[in-house]
Image 1 (cartoon, helix red, strand yellow):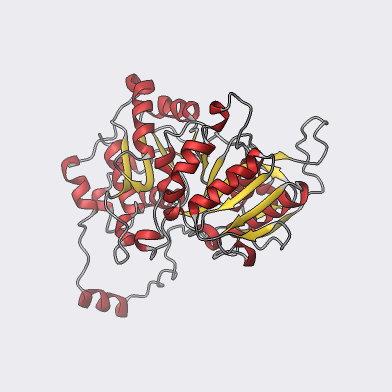
Image 2 (cartoon, rainbow, N blue to C red; image 1 turned 120 degrees about the horizontal axis):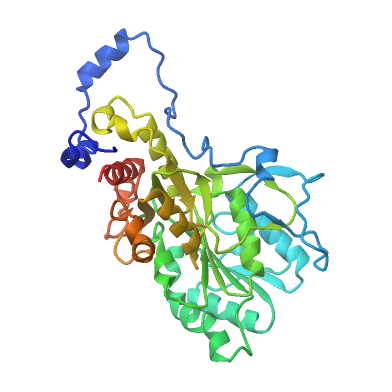
Length: 416
């Protein structure tokens, strides 16, 4: 039985565990013969995450990878002999994907604010031909991209920050998403992909740390994708560019340089609309996407091997719980079958996202899963999200759902 000794005090305890007085800490340190902890601590960071595929062999075993070897008339192949990988961070993988798209598709163009010199994150350093700047007008960028797509071009647009996508909301939701239906199938904006950096970076404040993916959940005709790593970014971006529907491709900006993998150099795609099970489990489903994948991984380590300060508030009965960690990847359409199958097995679901709690993506997922899995649930679906306030510059780390908040939700759900 996963029952704590004092469940009523659990949540409060996690956020109020005692810390020794500064004098006592100094005394203990000076007289201890124990080696000091590493500078980064013992918990996994993005750089040391086991989720990342840092070896060639594991890179080629990425689930769902589809190689695009040029001959589209031949049967699909999954041959990895002779293929190579290169160490890339996320922005380099995105740049590699766009380079391949431009090289293979003479109708492809890349455009947006400041992209001609590489953009603010240097993602668009893909040459000068068919890469050009636009005026500072998000609705103009989206409208221009829609027009290009309607005329048969492959339009790869960049909105410099996801926080500024709202002026383009009308063009995206009322035009790009609806033009196929509106024209009876005569026209479509399937050639449009809108790239945009998203999520927090630690010091972005009100206008550079928002996560607006939830605003597009009701826009039938769109797809919304958020990758977690370089391999995922390259494969999902190429899949988005070639998808017959308009896609908003949101890139977690803090992962541009911090997430590093061995990325296949060949042309490949990853499927849209499919979640990926990163860690299999049987006691609880932990669902997230983007940067919080790594906070969740840290929380699972804290659960199984809590620090001395946390040991009193984490029951021993839950430390061996098998948690299934899932990366949703595609926000719209989201993979309801994979999530429902997982929750039917585990009986519990915790959803983590950086966007605000009210009417977020987690609300839609929670409603659907409670409908489909109600009789199998052992606890209410729990959501861990950003607070329903603007992202404050000084307190951004308190705004996002960090590992402690995720751990608290997991323990409460396990002991419900």
